[in-house]
Length: 463
Ligand SMILES: Nc1ncnc2c1ncn2[C@@H]1O[C@H](COP(=O)(O)OP(=O)(O)OP(=O)(O)O)[C@@H](O)[C@H]1O
Image (cartoon, rainbow, N blue to C red; front, side, top):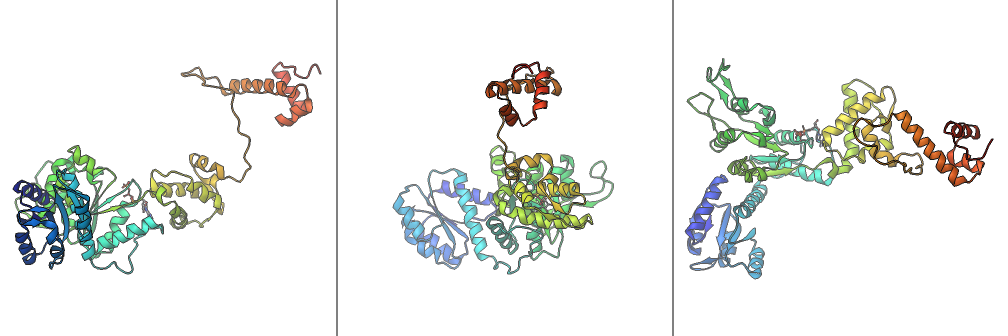
């Protein structure tokens, strides 16, 4: 419901709300607004303050007490701190000042409606089926609460997060905890499909509708009927397909490629991405109206770096699972192994961790315990500071850039020149003291003499 006496603003909001998939009513005075609110049910009121019959704040408490108890966003051209404070005190959701950018209002609208949906959603299921999601960190618990919330409603959900953070796992969890659990869960990776195939894969095709379409085939949308459709990497949907998919989402009807009639489909959408869809909207490569539709709720998955405390539990459970899968004895895990894992950056998140554990199990062979030495070499360096070996003196090599191209010396020549440089420095420091030279260099007297001879150095006089 838009209560504003400026027809241009009303038109702008009506268009925006329609684009976001909502219906909008308009009132131009406080009185008209109140009457409508008392007769209809509204989720949200966009309330202007300067109205012909008074200041909108006057009717705010009354509006919020109408049967549908709508959320209210104040829109005003005369923003002042006191007005904003009063609005919030009376329970307004947000306070937007004119002039505004569409983004500045669309976000509070989405959030207010999400909040409202969450409020109305059935209570969180007492025992959420975790669907193999591992982790007890606060951030994962927050995500599980979101899953429970999403599972209790039928709203479209957008799951965002870096690669390997478990977007598909969480999508399945939403499905398995929803009333659609006994119906199909269909996942499609939009990024893996060639552009020419996306449309027919999603919508299906009639026989002979294009070369190679030898039989009539239902698309994945129809296969997801009654259940959940997961569009993974939704940012990779070509613009043309975005348009037809939006239509299907809005009208819940699908038409096979080359077909004439339409079919009713009932599916719940869970989309996922690791791209910045808002940025893609600005770059005009993702439709704003589709983004509004698919992001009725959003679940942001944390990276593994943000939930370091979960690494240990994931490691134990996954090592056990992998050992069972490969039919080998499960291994004990040393504290150093955990420490080395905790020191990593994990850009590939849980998927990367599982791959590393697979490597470690293979490299451990018959060894009963996993140690850092079983990890891929590039992962060991990050944990070196935790190794139990006492730290050695750091060594500053007396070399600079070795030059570019093919003129790098052989390793043997390089070692020889470093060795000679070392001996020269040693002789300078010990000032003829043989014992001291043996002590510092850590090599025996005879070996030291051998080396001095080799390099034609005579630091201790003739011998
Ligand atoms: N919290 C978790 N608990 C247990 N396993 C997890 C968890 N998160 C991810 N995994 C595992 O990590 C692997 C990658 O997960 P998934 O495919 O769901 O990630 P994704 O975010 O969809 O990745 P991408 O963006 O690359 O498609 C899977 O084997 C999944 O089971």
